Structure formats: C-alpha cells, structure tokens
Image (cartoon, rainbow, N blue to C red; front, side, top):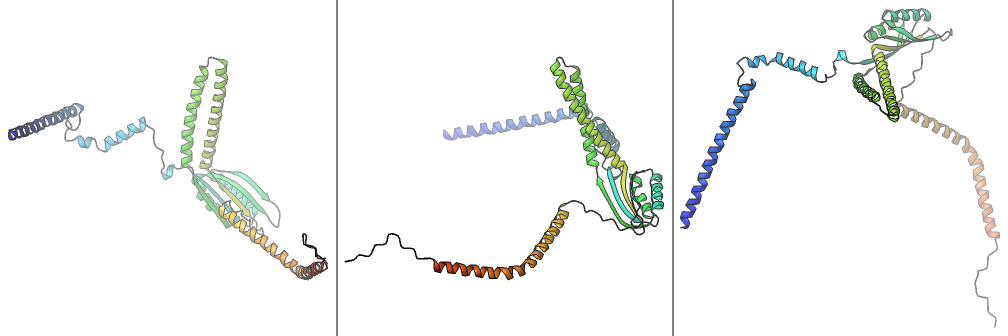
Length: 316
C-alpha cells in the first residue's frame, strides 16, 4: 500500500513538470510572435530591407546629431582655434635714438591695427627711458613682438598666456540665467497687486539687474583682453641703466625674501655682539668678582641669630 502511494506521488510530480514545460514553451512562442508583430508595425529590423543598414549610416548619424544639437544644449567648441587665450608680453629694448624708436614703435602698433594705451618717458640725458603700453590684435601678437625686437638690441622678453575659455563659457551661462531671472522678476512686478508687493519686487528686480550688469561688464572686459593683447615695451637710451624687474608675488618669492631678511638681521645681531664683547669682558668680569667679594664679606660680618625655642641652661 505504501509503495502504491509513492508511485502515485511520483506520477503526479512528473505530470506537473510536463505541464509547466508545455505552458512555458507556449508563452515564449507567443512573446516572440508579439515582438515580431510590433517590430514590423514600427518599421524596425524585421521590416527593414537589405539596404536599411546603409540608410542608417553616417547620413543618419549626422541628421541625428543635428537634431540633437537643435533640440538640446550645444557643447562649447574647445578646439585650439576657438579657445579664448589672453596674451600678455613685455620687452626691454636698448635703442640708439629714443624718440625716433618711440615714433617707429607707434607706427608698428597702428599698422598692426592696435593703439598706444600709455606713454611714459624720461628726458634725462644720462638716463633716458620710455615705457609704452601697447594694445594689438591677438592674431598679430607674435609678429608685432618680432618687429619691436628689430628696433634695437633686446635685453629682456617676457611672454605669458592665460586660457580663459572656461571662464568665458561660465560667464555666458551665468548671464543667460541672470537674464531669465530678470525677466521673471519683471513679469511678477507687472502682476503686483499691493503696495508692499510692489516695493519688494522693485527691490528684487533692481538687485537682479545690478548683478546682470556686473556679469556683462566682466564679459566685456574678458572679451577686450582676449581680442586685444597687451605688450609693455621699455625703450632704453644708449646710457640708460637696465630696468630692475620686480619679482612676482608667491610663496617662493616670500620665502626668499624672509630668508634674506633673517640673514640680514642675524648679521646685524652678530655685529652688535662683536662690538659689545670687549666691553663685557673688560667691565663684566671685575664687576662680577667685586659682587662676589662684597657678598662674602656680608656673610662673615652678619651676627649669628639665636635658635628660637632652645632650652636655657640650668644652674644648680
């Protein structure tokens, strides 16, 4: 009886497994047929002809990229030719005739499409110098430096660049956001119902407009520095002394200055100590010996103090 019950249980289990397998197979086939019908209706891979892969090639990718660029935010162009580079240079040139060289320098700058932003000259015959601040287009920066070097004998040249591309992109984004905030504030101001709301919104709109004006001023300044490079030229006469350059601020410059000041102070201290040492030996040693002698005599001449609480001698 027990064997018959076990056989029945095994048969029931086998029948359940077979039934589950059949059901799962039918569901999988149905899902595949459904996916095929959906692909055919959508014009997907199942309905695409043999040339569909070619049609979705570079032309399709380009169209998708154009559509994405029109619908979304375009990324900043960070190629070398599109970067915002600020060029700054300085040069010291020794010339034979100072005034003539300054005139030629002005002609070089104006011929390159720039202008002279500052002109400072010293007419001392023994030490004649001229310092001119030039603004030239960025694409003429290197050529202008070479022409300036040809005016005489170059003694010093310093060129530096600063990449302001990220700063420019950040300013553009902040200006766009601030303009949207100003527009929304003005719309709220036009819908104000009470006097308190009107006063509050006027103050908020004025603050937003001031922030927008500040950002736009920074953008104009950055655009000016990017479009026009700055060159500071120092012209030296035949007998003029070289211009001493001031070191740029920084940690190493401060460390060098502090170490030099420490050595200078130590030298002064040692000098003073060396000057005072003979006096210390000549006066200090006899004074110290006299002090010890006086102190010793005082100790010997001081009377002995009786011991407090000592027992008096007894007499019989």
